[in-house]
Image (cartoon, rainbow, N blue to C red; front, side, top):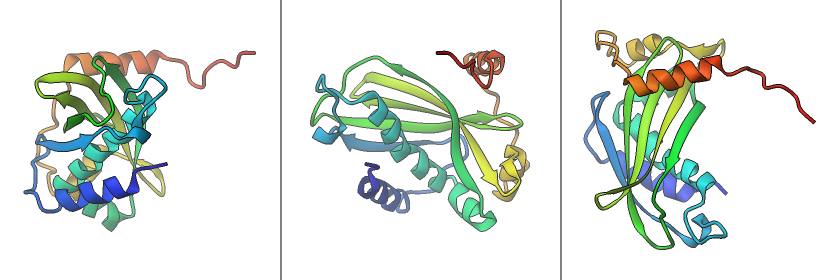
Length: 179
């Protein structure tokens, strides 16, 4: 089940924190609960993706994107992700999630997130997000203009992210039907 109560708590906390610039980092603190575990008694990989929402949506709130989305009747969806899992997070361990926008291109906004236990990075993900409206994907330049940051220079994506984008662009879609 989606962690609606945890999300409500995170949005409430984010609403009491100062606004962030587009390139600011939102830090949130969490605990791995029994319902977050897999059969190996560690944070489930699918649940990890869900818990990244607990940082990404409050980041959107603190940067001022949520009111713009609501005002324009736009939605926010994930169009792709790449994830690294490196260190286990086990039951009752506390961890911190760091979330930041790293840039955009003509279609998507890219957000980097990582989970930390102290100085140890347990995992990292990059999400390709799309703002959607009645006519489909809303260009990020239009979103930024609606946020009042049209004069903000486009954030340059790191080379490793552009390499991932290129790899995704070369991947066939739809996939070949097998079996």
